[in-house]
Each structure stands twice: as C-alpha cells, then as structure tokens.
Length: 238
Ligand code: FPP
Image (cartoon, rainbow, N blue to C red; front, top):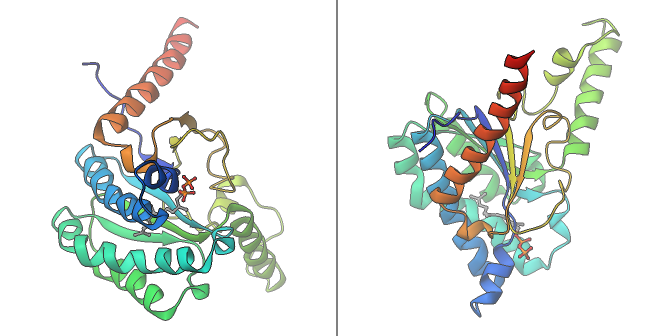
C-alpha cells in the first residue's frame, strides 16, 4: 500500500440519498437517515487518519424548495444524529462546528446544533463541520457586508488581501480545503465553498453517499496522494 498523504481538510457534497433509497424501494427519508449514519462512519474514519477538518454539505439554501415533508425530516435529523452518536463523537475527541445561518431552522434544530457545538468545543480531534442552510454566494455576501461595515466604522482600511477577506468567511477557523469529494455522479459544485475550493483537488465518484464507505475514502485519499506526487515530481525535476 502506498504511503498516503493525508489532506488537512476534506469537504464532501453528500449526494444520492434519495436515489439510494429509491433503488431499494424505500422512501427518500430512509436514504437521508442512512446518509446521517454514514456521517458517523466517515467522521470516525477521518479522525483516525488525523484529517483535521471534515466539512459536509448537509442542507443547502436551495433545499427549502423540497416538499415540506422532506424538509421537516431533514430538520429532525440533527436530533437523531446527536442523540445516537454524541457519546461516540466525544469519546473520539471530535469537535462539532457548523457553517450557515441557523435562524431559518425550527428552534429545536437550532438548539440541538448549538448544544453539540458547545459540548464539544474543547475537543482537539477532527473538526466535524456541518454546512446547514449554507450557500457559498450568501456566505460571500455576508462576508462583504461585514467587511464594508468594518470599513465604514473606521475599524479597518479599504485595502484588503485574500487572507484578510478569508477571515470574514464562515470557514475562518478551518484549514484550506485540500480535497473536495462529490458522491453520486453529478459533476457540479452546487454553491458549496466557492471561495475555499480555488486550489482544491476535486474528486467525483458514482457511489451514492450512503454507499461511500471507508474503502472509498481510502481510494479518494490515494487519488489525492497521486495527484500531489505528480506535482511534486515536476517541482523536483525543475
Ligand atoms: C442529497 O441527496 C442529500 C441531502 C440534500 C441531504 C444530506 C443530509 C444528510 C446526509 C443528513 C444530515 C444530517 C445531519 C446530522 C445534519 P439527495 O436527496 O439530493 O439525493 P438524490 O439526488 O438521489 O435525490
């Protein structure tokens, strides 16, 4: 087995829950439940590999357009997830974070997420970051507004560089995204982490999210390692 280069930050667009369920004659919600269970599996695996951050696209700003029943179910999933797995996340020293605007969610969903963040804030292992009601364009607008208001209030100068602007984004506490994975065959970014993936390696797999297991994660990291090595080789030859 080759020596793997472990990415500091992996981001995943968890697609294909609905199709996974349909193929098995199950309701779409069963796919989302299986998807939530898979978050546990992949988070534990990333933590064991000493990945520093794992950011997962759990609910986009566009997902509100889905049928009310499905939206309701997705809003209830964080409670199920943390009730089932919080003890294990804590045992593994995993820190829970979120990206996105919580205010649109029902109170219970908001509380469950903010409690998980508070209860794990001292943990120093993997940062498990859930993107909920997240959209990258919205994130960039909010960052621009905060920057503009700092300028207007005289707190900073108008001139700004990339590192300083990144400090206004929701990911300011996370390392650079090294690897972005999208499951289930679609070749789109769908408004996820647009600023942050400027230099990321991109991997698209046909596997649906519920079927994306540790073996697939290992394969994605192997591919990432190979791409990095090619770049290293070129550098070495020069
Ligand atoms: C995309 O599959 C998946 C989603 C829109 C939801 C992803 C959410 C989870 C996996 C669980 C969230 C859990 C927590 C704890 C926040 P799709 O429904 O678009 O699949 P399809 O393209 O096959 O229809």
